[in-house]
Length: 517
Image (cartoon, rainbow, N blue to C red; front, side, top):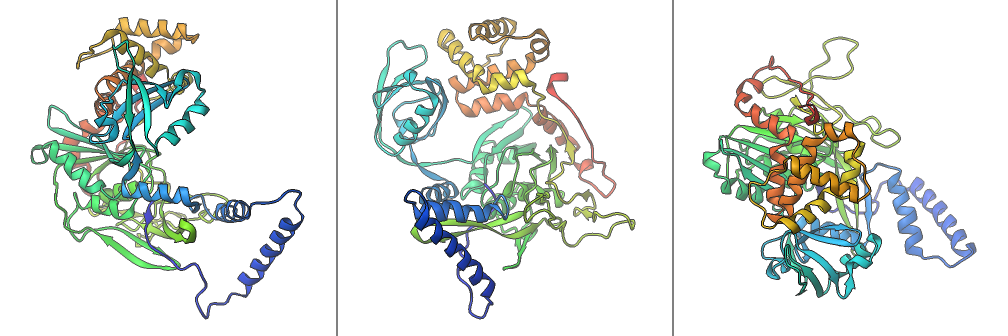
């Protein structure tokens, strides 16, 4: 989801504004619609024709971010931005013929019913899961979210199914989904999106980690699609000084506005590293760029998505809504991070404001600098100060992930090896067992891939076993501990004063892949 400013704009023409061309084009549309409605071979649904065809088609010709929401979609958007939804509070792993509970939210209906990691849901309202295809399972689960449900569940290591009944309720959707502390005092948090309660959830997570005793903090914004602009600004207030700018927003119908930091309930001066990747977008990029421009955090990972525009959500009649691109945003140094999108209105986005002129006549890209004089780039997302590559996966590993082989093996392993110890580590024997398991699934393990990919395979097995036994937070922790980007971020914390200092600070480049280590 993009950076969304919840404001209302009038959807009618203001008095005095010329409308002749608009009127002429509207009449053309009305004539075409009348011809279709009167002469098409079968009766038509006006809503589907106008809203789905006309409105969505019109928006798609502008940019990939503007969109129309019908009633159901608009309700889902409002739930997402408020951080609450109606449901049971479970995270499920769904495969053809199999549903596994990965996590239950504390206080939710699932939690009160005793559901936990590793539980297998074998029947939903009398429908046996192993008799249904995946395309039948998904709508069954979606329907079950909104009404009382009766489940048949098998607990890990238990041979007898158990019946569970639940009623849906309002469930809080946490955005800080992982938090842990290393023995050396370094804290780690992952923020999945920026919603209404994200800043407070961040404060809560950091305080649980021992805020005043942390030696450093890793904030992981990888795969964060963004969210509320105000939430990103509030988050920055935890690390920046009151009054420091976070971004400037400006558009044709939006007067220039500077969003600055306001006093926050917690102010942390701890060394800070922020992780980003190609799926870090919008409001998450706002936060990363502001911390980079003020030399408050070292940005590590891979270039972010590159979304430097803001949509405004406009409620419409009939409980529908419209998200429309209304403005660009610029980071504190004045740069725009929007990547060019050929064939759209963003084919040639602005590079920025308040930049230095190019050094030479032939240079087309202006220069932007952080508070302490470090050079930063405009366009194509937030460029990390330290480039670190993620796991390098090949086609064989991609197939195993897509086919759910690691989760299926972990489920089988947990069922036959309970209880699993907290220090569980896959060894050569478990690798051999996994290879035998793949054989039973008629999946080959070619020797070149098998020899090269064993470190990644062991990480995935350990992660999935922890997910089923101890829950998603512990699973994310063990995955992060062996993640090449996280490992590098932790190692850089002690070097931050030098890396963030002065106009001559070197931008380091590390092209690491776990497969080669």
